[in-house]
Image (cartoon, rainbow, N blue to C red; front, side):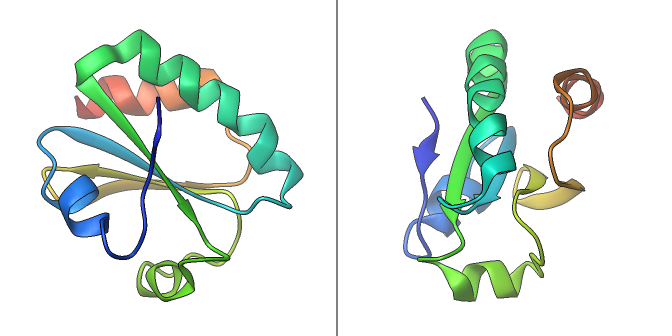
Length: 105
């Protein structure tokens, strides 16, 4: 299950995590975010330990969203061993996410 990450836990949960982390910058009022959420859950389950999904609510953690220049929700940022590897905005298809994950893991 995706971990709810805050500004206080971001370093530990995302930047210091080993392997691939998909950081989902979302908003509760965002319809595309709500449509994407079950897709991310499916991917996390399918990839097991090879993928960690971290959810960051931009309404509650605006400084974190600003730090990573998140200008739209949803914004998906892929981190590997603490470094940003890829980024996508908007409602991204599952197949596209799988391609990115497979290329980064």
